[in-house]
Image 1 (tube, helix red, strand yellow):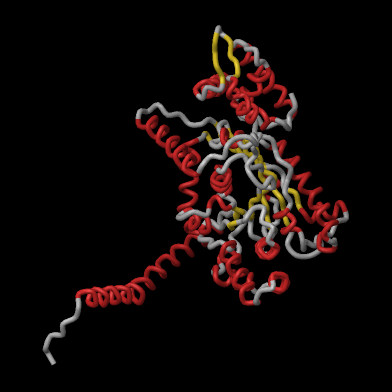
Image 2 (cartoon, one colour; image 1 turned 30 degrees about the vertical axis):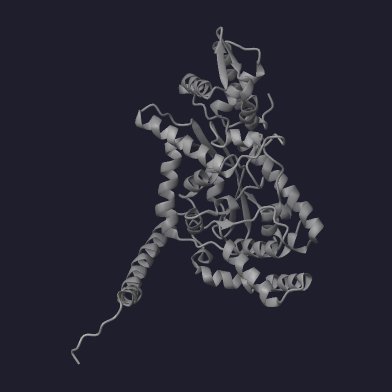
Length: 468
């Protein structure tokens, strides 16, 4: 009984690995899960005491349960049967597609990741790059929002930094759920974004089955009171102006809305602007249909080069932040009050009528957003420089900017140029444009650089709601 048994080395290694896995799975992992769950529950209890809009039970439901709920939704099942018949495929194959779409869309919200990891990263990153300012917030009316209402932040889309900036600034009030495009579906960003409560969207998808699954998820989240943030423009503005709203997500939210019953939906207009948009040149370049498409390698190389240059400047203590990044929160718009005012019941309208009303509401919201876009020093300088392309002295340029600031303030715009540091802010913005070779100085005159005219126009166009 005590004799030795010889086994190959590979078999011994396999047995050791299996034993280690069993030890990890049966003894260590349950304890780790319990410890993590305890910390998450502690975070939830703590943040719910200070949030204006509490974390909803829907957000705390296990992801597998939400996926099953979505897959077996009656309207999704009906669309699946129609799709299978149309494509002449077995029902099981169509259901597998629905399962795939549901797994792709449904987030895996984690309160600890959102309020401890995500908030910390977002705050540090935003403040590292910009001087972050909340220019205006209608706090009195925001505080009066029904705690049980579904709150939807409606924003303009200037940069991919919008996700970071808005999530960081709103984290003191609520946890935001975003619709994120396919650009973010790369490891490990996908896992982090899902844990932050965002859901992925295939933009411009013509697949009717996919759109039905997405519609039902948005409907579920809205009905359950999940606070969301939407960019009606559907993508980043390429010319700096607000784009015409795309109505898909808003239509999904309002499709079954009845003003006489259920939760109210409250839209909060939000305006965002930057003294420097990180993607400005690439966005403007896309306006040229003849421009050659850049390869993925070019994008990666350029991005790493940009990061490396700025890190090198930081190490040499010569780096400066990219100016202001500012957000304005407008007055909330209740869908219930809006419907009662105009005698609209979205749930009772057919598709064409409903879409027309959604378009009208979206137009009103985007008008509010346009007037909330903060006025910052660089857009002001860009406008002033382009107003005199033949050249002007720095004194005349500064005077032109000061006059424009006074006119904008009288018109009710939110200008993020503090009176006590106005001269310094304007001078800093002008130096930024000179360092980026967008403004050149010769013979004592400041002129727009010919190769930078479109980029300067991009920044000037953020003031389009306030004609000169």
